[in-house]
Amino acid sequence: MQRTWFVARRRPLLTIAGSLLAAAIIAGCALGGPQPAAEDVTLPAYAPQSGTAAATVAATPAAVTQTAESAPATETVPSRTLGLAAPVAASTLYGAEIVADHQVVVAAQVNGQVTDVTVDIGDVVKAGDVLVRIDSSALEAQAAQAKAGLEAAASNLSLLQDPAKAQDLAAAQAAVNAAAAAYTRASNGPTDEEQRMALAQLKQAQAAVGVAQAAYNVVKGNPNIGMLPQSLQLQQATLAQEAAQAQYDKLMKGATADQIAGAYAQLESARAQLQRLQDGAKPAQVAAAEAQVHAAEYAFYLAQLQVSKAAVKAPIDGIVSKVQTAAGSLAGPGAPLLTLLSQDVRVTIPVEEARLSQLAIGQPAQISVAAYPGRTIAGTVAIIAPELDPATRTVQVTIRPTDDEGLLAPGMSATVELLAP
Image 1 (cartoon, rainbow, N blue to C red):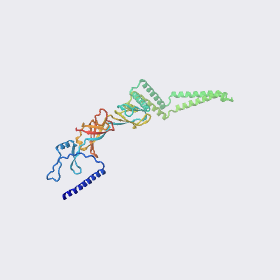
Image 2 (image 1 turned 45 degrees about the horizontal axis):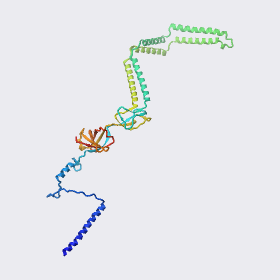
Image 3 (image 1 turned 45 degrees about the vertical axis):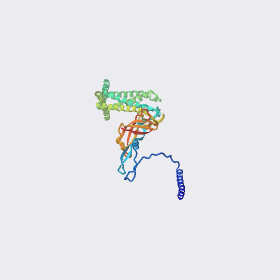
Image 4 (image 1 turned 90 degrees about the vertical axis):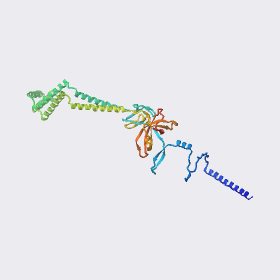
């Protein structure tokens, strides 16, 4: 009877404890918010190891095999902190950006006003296509001037190289004879014949004055004597006598030293001209004329080159990505006109130093872009930089994709996976 009472008293205590535990669990769920549903977990079999302080969990053979196949590859790298080897997960995925193989900013090379822009953004051009035209009227005028200078230099060279003609030699000889006679007269003074001729002219002038004076004396009492022809005739005769007297005095005095020296210089110049015609041009003269021709040729070439640069052409095959000018605007040397992107693209990724020995030219790679999910584009390693970045300990690796469809465009973000060589 006493035992039955003990059992009856114990069951209410257990019921109360269970209620308190359930209330605590419910309160914990209410404070922590909704909890995820529990999943069934299969615990691996284990057995305690004798002689050890703790038990070691031993996985089943099936579990070990599955773990080994799904775990990422690891490699051992030195630990810089402890000097120990630590396993690092091997990753061959790299984030990168698609860039154009070549980007060319096309600039003007001459001054002038833009007259025409023949392309727009997105146009595909070939090397040599005209992109922009600049006014070339001033440049063409300079080219015409340079051409005239070239023709003049060529004519001068031709005259030096051609032999002298007979009429040129005769004219030069006549000039020498005249200069020699002038020098002789200046040096030796007038001849007897010249003296007699000058004296006769003087006497003739004096006689004319006598005749005019006699006629004037007849009418000199006339009040209007100044208006009569006899007065004018006397004046003219007097002036002629004075001129004849001056000529006679000059002839009898002879040439001065300066006049003699001038006559001699003219004689020597005439002789030198005749000698040049007879001997032809000297080698040094011909060489100088040829140098002038070459200089004129280069000047004409440069002028033509400037004219050709007024038509701005595409230096490479590509796509127009920017147009920075318009018809009517002014252009100058170095001013950007437009930008071209090559149709070939590339991807450059930084590969860590530990994988340097695993890289090789021609190594395959796969490229994925967000614009085409689920698709990969093949590529190969084209360039491995010869040096590493000392800040990041990485080497720049350039990959050229095989994109026959033209899916990749500069500026796309990409993910690159390096495959085993």
